[in-house]
Length: 144
Length: 386
Image 1 (tube, one colour):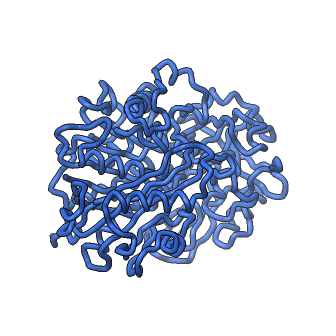
Image 2 (image 1 turned 60 degrees about the horizontal axis):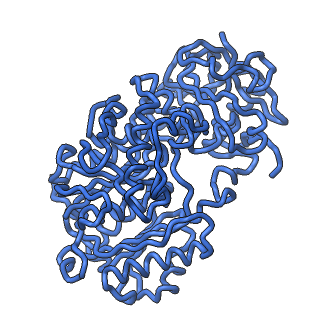
Image 3 (image 1 turned 30 degrees about the vertical axis):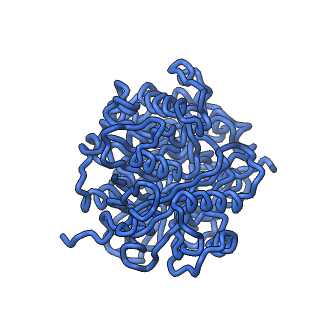
C-alpha cells in the first residue's frame, strides 16, 4: 500500500466552506441564520429550527482538550511511520458543545509526533494553528 | 400504552454455526449457507418452508444468493439492517415483527464474515480523500474503530474515575467463559491480570485485550410464530422484546459532537426495549453485551439501566460479570473478545443456549437473557425468555 495520508475532500458540497476557511487561516463554525445555533460538523439543516440558511462565523480559535488518545500500529503506513502520536478532541472556549478532532503540536509547523504524547492532559488550554498537508490545510493545535 | 405486537409472539427454534477460525477455506457465502443449513436442521424445518430473511446490510451474500443455494421457498419478507455491529438484534426484531404480523411464517437470520485476513478490515480500505463525516477525524490519524472508541473511553475515565483495572475485569471475565467453551477461539488460553497490564498498546488507553477477535465464521437462527413453536424439537426461546435505537445527533463511532457523547445509542434502544417488557433490569440474571471493545460494557450497563450514569466501571468489580455467581454474568460464551467476533451474532446464539439450558457457562435461574448489539453505532437489543 502507498504510504499516504488521508485527506478531506475539501470540495464536498455541505462542508467546503469550512476547508476554505482553514485555507485562509480561519476556524469557521457554521451558524444558523435563523436561530443562531452553531453546528459542527457542518450539515445542510439546523437541527433546532430546520432552517437551511447559515453563515460561517469565525471563532476564537481557543479551546480545551476534551479527550486524547495515542494510536499504535497496526495503522495505515503513513501514520504507522509517525506512531506513537496524539489525537485530541478540543472543545471550543466560547461554546464547549462545538468540538474538533485534531492533533496537539510542539511547534506550529512541526510533525504530529514531535510532542511527547503522554504529556497531553484533558482540560489543558490550546489554540488553533493551520498546517498545509499536500494540497489541503488542516486545523491543528498548540498549547495556549 | 397500546399492547406490543411482538411481545412473546415469535420464537427462535433453530440455531446453527460453523467453526470459528482464521483463514477458513470456504467463501463467506458458503459459510453463511452452512450455518443456515445447520440452523434449519436444528429446528427440523425443511428449507422449502422458509419464506422470510433478515440480514445485515454489510452481509456479502444477498438474499437471492442464499435462497438459491439452500433451495428456499418463495420469499415474502426480506429486510436488512445497517451499521454493522448494531444490526444483530435488529434482524431478530424484524423477523419477530414479520412473523407476528403474518408477513412470513419461517424467517432465517444470519451473519457470515471472513474478517481474520488483515486486508478485510474495513478501516484499511479507506480511499485517500474522505468525503463523509469522517473527513473531520481520519485525516488526523483517528483511523480505526479502536481509536474512535478509545477517545470516548479516555473521556469516560476522566469524567467518572474508571481505570484500566475495570476494563481488565471485562476482558478476564469473558476469557474465563471462553475457557469453558470448546467452540471458543480462546478455549484453553488463560488471561491473567498481569497479561492484561503488560499487553501492547493498540490505542491508549486501550490495549490488545480490550479489543475483540478477528474471526472467520457464520451463525444463523430460525424464527417462527410462537403458537407453532412447540411443534419443533428444541425448547422454544421466545422473543419477549426487541428494539432499535439512534440517539439524538448521534454520529456513528465518532460520537464526539452531541451534547452528551457518553450517552450512546443504548439509551434510546433501552427505552423502547423495557417499555413493553414484563422484565426489568433487576430481573435479568444473564446478559450478552456487544463487546467489540471492553469499554462498551460499562457504557452499555449504564444505557440498559443496570446501574446509574458513571457507575458502569465499578459495576464490573468483584467478579460481577463472571458465571456462575456474579451479579450479572455477561458474555457467557466468551463474547466477541474471547469466543468469536461475528458482528455479535454469536451473542444471540449464546442467549438462545442460556434459555435452552445448554450453555457451557449455564446460569441456572435465569428466566430471560438480554442480548445487545453495538454501542457507538445505530444499534438494537433483544430480550429472550424461556
